[in-house]
Length: 369
Image (cartoon, rainbow, N blue to C red; front, top):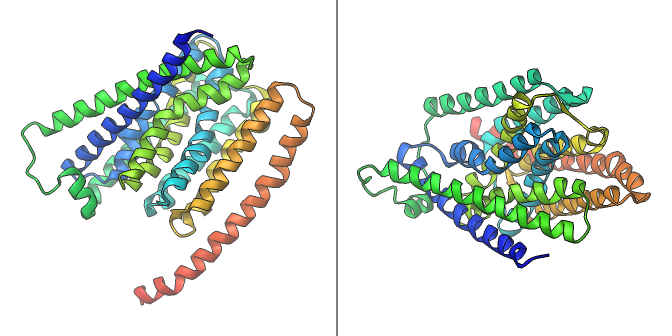
């Protein structure tokens, strides 16, 4: 282990924090200037930009013939985005969830997860599969833009107006300045993620961890750190729409665009390992489905739900370590997670969502009546 390992780790963290601050500020100001809701910015510009590390890693891995790394990076990032990042963010500040996320974006995230799982079921992702996935992200982005034009935001709250100066006259060429802020933020985020991942991989190899554990944990978490920094800072600033929308948009982008591009550019079909089909794909799909009842139960993510997310991520990481080190308990632990813990949690969440919906019905009916 060399001193440069720690230099990479510290420099990467600093660049990620700085990049997230600049990106959120530039994106939010741009949203305010053009009347675009922060949720739309979180689902497009911020989400797509913070997924740039996943794009670089997966495309490069696919071009180099490392299909497991390309698949593992996306699956691990999507799982970490929800369980780790939303879990930490909700612990710091309970998050309010937009109704648009419940009605549109979360179902699209679930659909994209199940579609990718279905396409990978034959053990590979071909160029045709990649074209189908990439066309999905084009259609999704177009729909968001058109939908926002037809239903423009009525206005932002006072805190948002005060934070970003909505009541002030726009300066000449302000949009260029905001675009420059976004570009600078994205550059810092990508650079910071690359440094941090390089330092983390070096540290993991020194500690004797396998490449599989590095790909599914350190690389996945490292490329998800821009989402972590962006969501945490957005939540602390009161930009709850950006904090949650960034995660949902990133997951959609990772599946449709990152894997789509990787499959399109790969000289050969990307192979999907049997273990990924047996465990990682089901876990990713279950995590996506779990968002719907959790978000619907009161249209917020409470601290206890954030703690539940973190507990599941700890269990998932434990399974990866057990599997990578060849422990005999790994298979039993994985089967218990898939066959008992996840279904029981799903039933509990559905019951909670049903109770929340039942409590809201009298108020809704009274308003409509």
